[in-house]
Length: 319
Ligand SMILES: [Zn+2]
Image (cartoon, rainbow, N blue to C red; front, side, top):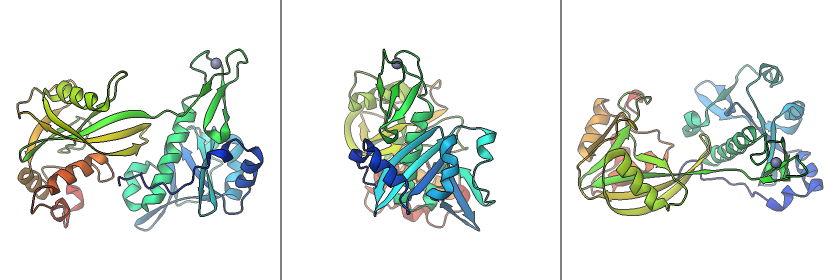
């Protein structure tokens, strides 16, 4: 399974519409609260390690009235989990727990250091809060919306409208395209130097996932695909996506790279990837990403090849 996919919570959708149950869960002595501020999660740094802060409810209580979003996430091992979300605002910052070692960080930068289940809960919380903060007003009539169903629906406050708004997830396709012993990787100018990743793009209305894979490959690199096979998916709340991952093969290695879309796209053989990693002239995408997973699975599919072995012992700057 991919990173952020190991969510252990029972989402308990029936409890979302039960006011008495919601009060009971919020007041549960074990209840844990996840804070999201300006799309960042709360962590505590202890020497070299970083751990997620899951606040006891009594510590989070002072924050509840100023939160812009409150979401019941679910229950695991009889412990209820909630998320409180805040927009960037100095007055709100002043109310945060006064612990010097607390810090807000981007989840995807620290997820490798967290237990898989915990990082999945944090990702879910981040996605829900992001949705709330971007949907204060009704897309139908412009009136303010308010939070119902324990944070899983927003309703328009205009009695003549009353439209219900549900959390949004944007579907993106991501694909490892190979031809013989080479795979097609690309980079954006804003990425760290030498980093390459698989092609990806958003699904457009009126197309299937497979059509989006073929279209994006053609638009970005001029490559025609011979086969497309579903691999796996990944919640990717950075800010609001689910990544649908595919393995594809190309009809040929001829390229017509669209340099308006990307800085570079090239074919890399397994040997070139291994050599580049060792020499520090080639960087893979972050290990928490499905892009890394697709590249790894393709790389390891050839007998005698193990990307983990290549990565082992590499200096930090090569990872
Ligand atoms: Zn409305």
